[in-house]
Image (cartoon, rainbow, N blue to C red; front, side, top):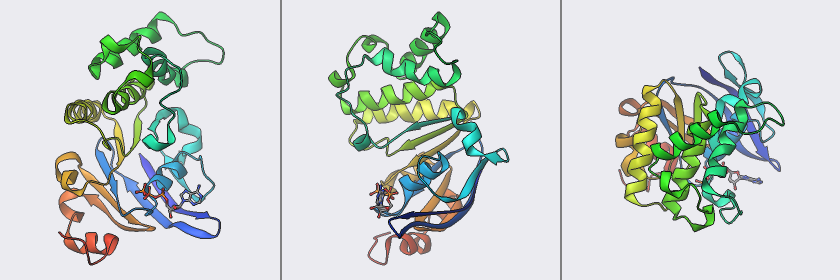
Length: 235
Ligand SMILES: Nc1ncnc2c1ncn2[C@@H]1O[C@H](COP(=O)(O)OP(=O)(O)OP(=O)(O)O)[C@@H](O)[C@H]1O
């Protein structure tokens, strides 16, 4: 269970997140929505403890710092260097490192996990390609395969559907539904409001402060959207 308690983040004296407390539903796909600069990415980064913050995130009652191996994270595309010279299968194998001992070589068992993860995202034939040779959608599928290989209980994806083709989007969504059926908890930062009902079970609506958190049917309404995006939003 993931709980966020009084998380507050400042960037140079400017408040990016103001006292966020919420519980994330287990075994569900939760979307995080809100306007540009609402603090969506900041929320994921504070749970991951990669930025300074007040308050804390708890996983099964303990500070999330103690469970970082159990969180697989794909950052926003703009933060990733897709020209880095690495093959697809090597990139996916990085996901297995979280479960390995220091200086341990990748064993046959880990390579089997890599192959299975690539098959899951329909990219088994691309294992020997350089990541720089992939389309945006294929690259996003490779990053999801890296999460699958990590076998983490929590999966955080920051804008995974931006600029990708519809085939990749469907493959990613099908893989996420499988992960949910296996009991995983998935958090996705997302900006396309038209897909919210189709993709998510639960929704967190943010704009520096928490506007709403709950089942999509209960919180995805005009009042909450106007509170987050302002009166100009067309609902
Ligand atoms: N490293 C940083 N230094 C200073 N300010 C930052 C930094 N990272 C984010 N911010 C600011 O904090 C606020 C929240 O940023 P964040 O990226 O979390 O928002 P977001 O909701 O994910 O936005 P977007 O939808 O545009 O990706 C924004 O005003 C942003 O400009």
